[in-house]
Each structure stands twice: as structure tokens, then as C-alpha cells.
Length: 318
Length: 282
Image 1 (cartoon, rainbow over the protein chains, first blue to last red):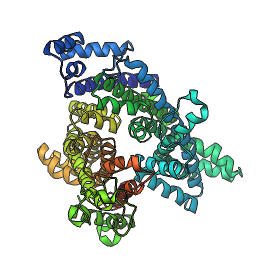
Image 2 (cartoon, chains in turn purple, yellow; image 1 turned 180 degrees about the vertical axis):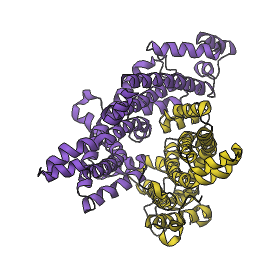
Image 3 (tube, chains in turn yellow, purple; image 1 turned 30 degrees about the horizontal axis):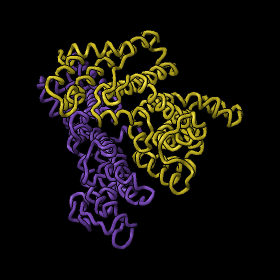
Image 4 (tube, rainbow over the protein chains, first blue to last red; image 1 turned 90 degrees about the vertical axis):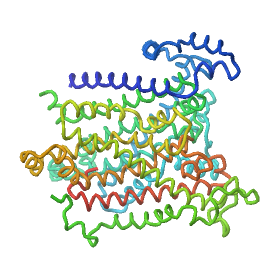
């Protein structure tokens, strides 16, 4: 297990390095010279040159990459060109906001998805099972941003219950803050609920047919105990992995959701940076989201290996 | 040698999902082929006397903020969405399939290299990789298509490799290799015809992902550009008016849902017909 974790960590490190090179090269290929952008349209050639020397833009790419990467390792993400501030605090603030969305959505998906999956498995073939499957199918078919607009329409415009977008800092009061989170979180939940519920359902159905469950029933155990104590524990193995993978998806999906709801998280920051050609900001946000995504996938792999005794043992044997 | 068992391929035994999927997609394909010709109005013609009109006999799905007919725009957008989905998937296949075949057939160093490279691409969230590719130059529809093709290529590599590896265990491949057939013969005449059935199923699902990712990219302004009536773009443009005129967003959203459900059903049905062994694997 230790060796497995170690190799996965080394592998993650390699992926991150390659990724940072990719991000760096692609953003370097972007049109528009940074020095020109800073100096403005009417700056003289000398000014532009002075700026590019000051920023080190005249040096070879590899030197520039080395300096950039070294900075990141020291926690220095550079300065934003358009906001004219250090990037690290901006990005971290946005990351925390995005994480608030992602973590609350993941929590609700875990509870609801597992609950619905178990319900569908226990009442297999009955109306409630078919309803869960039907809802799952629709949940996957409609793109997240369209869900978002439907929710805005219903809860924002017609019922006037919730704000249709934006963000309120927690200093404005917990209620105002929470109200702005509800719709984006519901949207994220809708996107993932189907997969979690379907997976829990199918693995629960498999487990319910195993001999030890039959034995527990034959012993005369109450159905509730059979389902929740015996069956669920084993049925959850694949679900846990999918939840961790989903967490990565949310982090990617926030770009769209945050745009619809004008929620000032990492995704919207990235789009802002792209529109303004703010290279350091683009590099920092993409790298941060991708790192978080990789970490979520790593956690998924490790969890899967950890909770699955078969894999755990086969690994310690090797 | 035929991969699909003949009993399952007669139309009488096709599963219901395949029929429903085809019934949903047939009108969409007709509309996509017909394009602007089947639309009651010119999709980008503005009419300032009829702005934000609710659905009615003149405008079945109402009009948008420029007085353009939403129904016509949605119809015309069908072509764009389907082209996006199909051509992006084609690009993924063109890039991914040969690499997957080589990785599965040659094994060793080459396989390691190809698989690690696709792992790195898979480490990016799909939409982010799309944005990264698109951020380099001004947005355009064809660039979005290429970006989506690249984003999903690694997954095609993985699937093709897995199927190839499975096939390599088969006796007829071993026989061909023992006969001393060239690698090219084995790859093209023995393996290629047999990876199509499972790959076709996989491809139908890829198309759904491509359409959804394309819509999302257009929605955030990095795909199709105005005055195009791409569904993702239409929904984005409808966002500020969603309270006054929800029909502008609802119409393309509904079209997207029908398309995605239709292709999904078709894919489920195809799997049952072409790849009966693996039904329920996903």
C-alpha cells in the first residue's frame, strides 16, 4: 500500500510538471505581446523593449519557464497584468469560493445519491425505482448550464425565492451568503446525482444477491439491518471512487456554472483572465484547477485501493 | 470471425431503445440536412418591430431581443450541433484509433509512451483543456471542433487499446501471426474489422460528450460566434432576458436534451445489437 501510494505520488509529480510545461508553452503561444499590452497601444518601441527586459521576456523560453516554475514552488504566482496585484491572494480567495460550491455539492450528492440508489435497488422494478432511473436519464441529458437557467427561471423569476446570481460575502450575514450558494449547488448536484444513484443501485443489487446477505436474511435479521449494516458497506466501494472522480469534474465544471450564476470563483476568474489576455493569471488558474483535479483523481485511486481488500492484498503481495 | 452474432442483427430483434433513438434522431438529421431551407424565417434576420415576442401563431417559439425567430434559429442550429458532435468525434477517432491500435499491438516502449501521453491529457478537466487550446487564438467554431477532438482523443486511445489487447488474445490473431503475416496485414485485415462493433458503441457516446462540451464552450463564448444560432450560444445570449423571455433559452435547451437523449438511446441499442457480451458493462 505504501509503495503504491508512493508511486502514485511520484507519478502525480511528473504529470504536474508536464502539465505546467504545457500550460506555459500554450500561453506563450498566445497572440499579443505582453510588453505591448502593458505599455499600451501608443507606447514607443523603447518603452516596450524596456518593459520586456524588466519582465525578462527577452530571455530564452526555458529560462522564463524555470523562473516561473521556481516562483510557483515558492508560492509566488506572479503579478496579474490587468488587476495589477499579486496573483496568489486573488486566486486563493477564488479557490476557496469554488471549493465551498464543490464541497457542499459533493456532500449533498453523496447523501442523496446513495439514498436514492439504495431505495431504487431495494424496490427494484417498482415505481420508485423507475422514477429514479428516469430522473437519472434526464439529469445526464440536459447540459448543466441549461439546468442552471431553468433553476434561475423557477426559483429566481417566478417564485422570487432566491437571487438569480452573484455572491454575498459571509460578512453580509450567513443567510445572504447561503442564499447565493443554493442555486449553483443544486445545479452541480443535478449533474452528478444520476451517476452516483445509478452506480449505487447497480452495486447494491449485486450485493443483495450475494450469499452472505441471503444468510443474514435467513437468520431472520430485520431487513433494515441487512441493508444498512451488511449490504451497503460493500456496495459503497465503487460509489466512493465515483464520488472522488466527481469532485474533479465539479472543479472543471465550475467554469460554466460560475459564468451562469456570476459567481466569483476560479472558473470565472479564468474566463476573465482569458478575455483580458492576462497571461500570468491564466497560467495560475489553469494550473491550480488542474492540480486540484489531479489530486481528486489521486484520492479516488487511493480510496479505491484502500477500501477494496482484494486490491489492497494483491498490492501488498507484489 | 464476425464480431456481432448474426441472430441479434436482424431488425426484428433490435431493442426498443434503438428504435426510439432512431425515431428521435431521424427528424433532427432531416432538419440538419435541410438547414435554413426548412426554417420558416431567415435565422439571422432581425425584426425590431417584433422583439421578445412570446410564442404564438406567427412565431412558434417566440422571438429574441433582435426580433429573430427562435424556432427558425433552433432549427438552423441543429446542423451546427450535429456537425460539431460528429466532426469532433471523427477527429478524436482519427487521432486516437491509430495510436490505440499501435499501443495495443506493439506493446513495450511505444505503448508506454502513448499511454503516458494520453494520461497527461486526461489529467486536465475536459472543458479546461478545451479552453486552454482555444485561448490561444480568437474563438471560432472550427477551432472548438478541433479542440474537442483533441480533448477526447486520449479516451479513444484507451478504448481502442483495450479492445486491441483483448483481440490479441484471440486464436485467429495468433494464427495469422504464426502464419507469418505482416504486422500491417494483421492490423488492417484481422484487427481493424473486429474493433469496429465495440468502437461504434463507444463512438455514439463520444458524440454526446462532444455535443455537450461544444455547447458548453459556445456558452462561455469560446465556440461558435454570433450571429450563429448554435444552441449553446443561443442559451448564453438568452441569459440576460431569461426573466422576460424564457422561451429564447428553453427552445434550444429542449433541442439539446432531445438530441442527447436520442443519441444515448441509439448508443444503448447499438450496444445490445453489436456488442452483446458487454451489455451493462458501463
